[in-house]
Image (cartoon, rainbow, N blue to C red; front, side, top):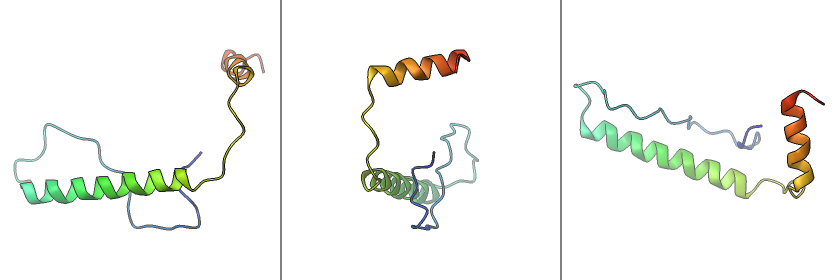
Amino acid sequence: MSLQDPAAQSALSEPKPYSRNADVGDDHDSEGHQSAQDRAWLREQLLAGKNSPLCDPITPAYFEQLRARARGLL
């Protein structure tokens, strides 16, 4: 299930994982730019979740059904 609203197309992509072994040629400006893109992506995802329709309440029965499905009983 995607959190992104299909009606809202955006040029932002999922952020790259952090790496301590970044290229030596990378400068701080590109890291700052990547951080800004990461924050923009996170904001977009949070707003998409906030604006998404509500789902049914999650109850203990839901988790029992999920466990049964994970065990291969359903």
